[in-house]
Amino acid sequence: MKLYEYQSKALLRRAGLPVPASIHVEKVLEVESALSGSGINEGVVKAQAFTGGRGKAGGVKFFRTVGEARSITSEMIGMQLVTRQTGPGGVKINSVLLEEASEIEREYYVAILLDRAKVNPVIMVSPDGGMEIEEVAEKTPERILRMYPEIGKPLSENVKNEGAEFLGLQGSLKHQFGEIIQKLYNSYMQYDATLVEINPLALTKNKGLMILDCKFDIDDNAVFRQLETGGNPNAEKTKAEIEAASYGLNYISLDGNIGCMVNGAGLAMATMDSIKFYGGHPANFLDVGGSANEEAVAKAFSIIVSDPKVECILVNIFGGIMQCDTIANGIISAVKKSGLKLPLVVRLEGTNVEIGKKLIQDSGLNIISASDLDDGAKKAVSVISKSN
Image (cartoon, rainbow, N blue to C red; front, side, top):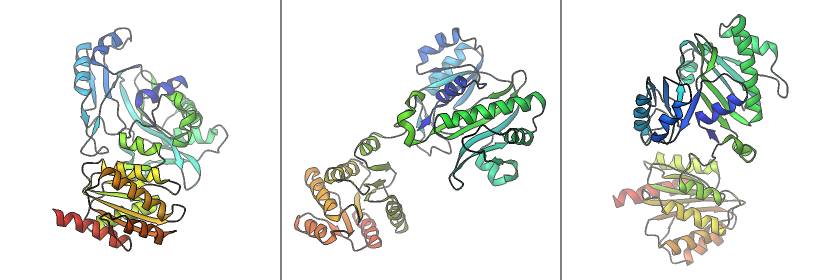
């Protein structure tokens, strides 16, 4: 579950961390009243979106008057913000953050995230704040310091000092950095975070170190106890993705035209790769898992069919826990209910496979049978090619 910047900064402010004064607004009419009692005379309007690179895409703009703030907010709310991370479709902006301006002397990068290989949080710092960390890692990896704190204990003085010295901070700034990194680490643990990224942590002319931007990601498995953060686990999901989740299905919409229904995330990825290999384009990732019943399978089918881009459907099931006859009954029920007109390619293998194949064969439905994954992918791509 991702938090918007305004939600992230509210948590950091609550933890006693230095963040600029700011106000979150969802309507242009709120701008004037919001700024009037805030003490913010000039600052920045920041589009609230789950993406980096907002500034380069026009999602961060300065204002010097209330009128400018209102005008910029009017432009941003409702716009599609397109960054390198969003893809060409961009993301719709529904709200903005009005934040006081800061006079910046230096910018640093600080993040705490989970190193899955070492089963430990890792603290990353770099003197190259303001840049995309991927670019720094690629071009100048020596400019990133990684530190591994001991779980269950406050950060050691060695960790705090090593981080500050790597950034070139001395005296009172070194002490302030130590306090900041400790409070960030506390927040990371308290809110079951998988990522807390500060970019930049700025050295300002009169306020010392200040957190100017923040990304905050919370472990999906801990959402039930972190709803007080204000985050919405469905914020980035489409209606179809939300509906699929309610049936225990893992579904992600893509841009292609071959709908996929598979059991198992690895097999789903292999199926999509095979479709691409043979010149096709998958329309979705859909993993029905190992415990779905006939109702869930029928729902998965209807979700795929609801996508107007889909021109063919490929079902690829390797039955283990999920038995082939269950899948077959779900497919038959869904096809009959929806009156499907699209080509349907089905590959079944595993538990009760002969029962499943016979159910489909005896259904009287026009279903194309495939012997294996390659055969299924070829046939799905071929069907579309012939129809076009």
